Image (cartoon, rainbow, N blue to C red):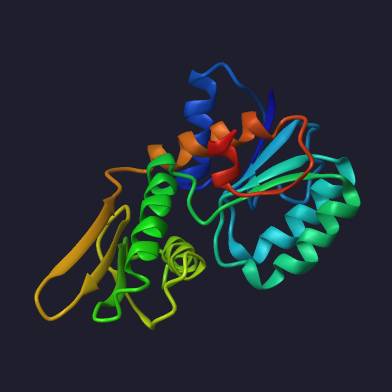
Length: 222
């Protein structure tokens, strides 16, 4: 696999390190200092840039027919137009608010919990997420993903959402259900960013030869 890395911050560098350890051919690293230059040909790109750049990045990849794994969050307002472009260009896209395999399995557990709680009207629910101080979006894309998983599973009552931004917290998400007599909590805590990078590389390998718009759930289901 010839891999193009777009965005060379902490996540981009980590993807680069792990890709090379896996024997992946990293053909280019795109960042602010070379974004206007020619991009090398690749089988798949992994985009961990910034939200504002994602639509333009996809448009550029569409010209070369390069499929892409989008790990950046905060661009979803542009998703309908991006889906149209990807379909017209015959691209494969895996887009997720969180590429951690553990988080995506956690999402499935949360959906099942929400399904079980849907009929238990005495329980209210909340989502709290905590991340490092430099994270731009709040609530996190993962928190929104979890909320959508809950509502999609039939939980139609309000879900209170809150965020914390402090220090260097890699990412913690807690889903809670509370009634008069008890509280149930499910928590996923990331210890470092390697899980996100590993999931993005798994998605990039899976995406080769595929066309369409996919989620990390699609990747994990094979």
